[in-house]
Amino acid sequence: MKNRSWAFLAGGLLVALLLAGVVSNYASSHPDGLDSSLLKGCTVDADDNIVGGSCPAQQARDHEFADSPLADYGVRGVQNSFVSTGLSGVLGVLVTFAIGAGGFWLLRRRGATPTDGDATTSAEGATPAATSRAGTAG
Image (cartoon, rainbow, N blue to C red; front, side):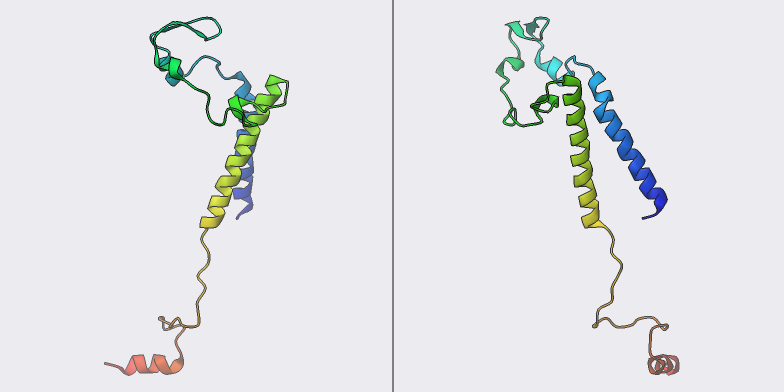
């Protein structure tokens, strides 16, 4: 790969790491579209706890991976929420980059390597005898 391509790739990775590690801490804490639509029909308090009404969000359960080390946009065991959220974002970017790079590495183009059984089809690679026979045919 050219040096320019490596620089572009490294720059993109750096921008993604900065966004995930720093800017993600300033994302909105208000519910997104799915969360807010699931809360329609319910009354919620200031802490977003359902206090009345009837809505689909009342049947919500914890996810199977709720106890995982990176659950809930943070890293379990890190007490500082800013660092925990940023570290979780950085780890997510690195894992995603590694999976993507591995996929591209597996699917990369490889140069054509002739095998012993391949026949030469062009006049450049043909033997002189084959070329002279091809020229006199007809």
